[in-house]
Image (cartoon, rainbow, N blue to C red; front, top):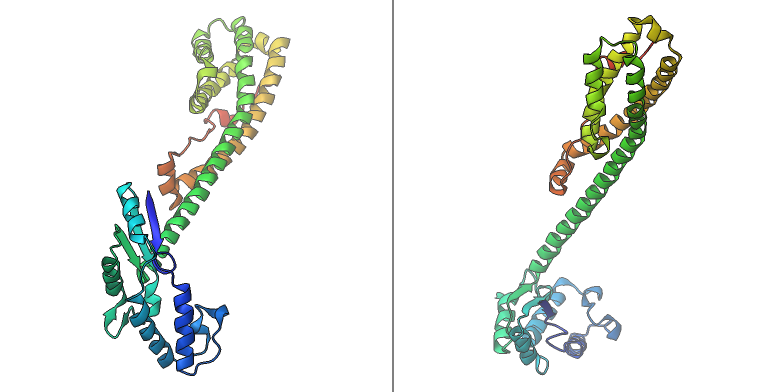
Length: 313
């Protein structure tokens, strides 16, 4: 476990010291306005820079370099380290000095010496401006994580919309899928010489539709659309087929389903386009790769299908 320990107020009991020291300093220098309420707020006492620097120097010489640790502090830290914990010493002591030094002495070096003199063992020490950089780095990391979570949630939302759009379209694709056997049986009785055309559609129809992935369903239905167009076009060559009442009814059902497929496909492709833009555009494409999101294929109408399935009755 990593354990962070502050120096002032944790390793040392500095409240009473600072109060006594500041009260004494104010009294000796005829400075007014200090009381218990602003124990650490000497910067708000409207002192001039010379007075502040003098205060810092006195505080540094009398406290930062010489304040004893709390009783058993060294022993407790030693036991924590023996138990496998890593000790991080953390302090903002640079605030007691301008530019981190007083009279040419580094606050950090004096603090390191103070820790050594008091037998305080540690693994890492972070003092002053180093803390600020750590805060900046942590802030950047937190912002990146928040942005990544937002991007991830947007991918989830768009992916769910794609699934929903496909589910709606799949209802109509399945209706057309179920119409095919009846259409083939009806046409087969009149167009016995069109075995190749019928065989192509039957083979596609015999595929295990429920076991297909969404992309496989799209590819199969694109091929199926071409075959269905060929079958329905046979009606022009076989007048008896064209006049068959069952064929007329199936043609009407198929035309209605094709219209529903076209409308749902339009919505599906629009959702997929938005999703693909998110996956492919910078900087979201970086996170798309990390989260495993890939571009999806659109369900494009074939050249024959754009002409619509139409049989003149």
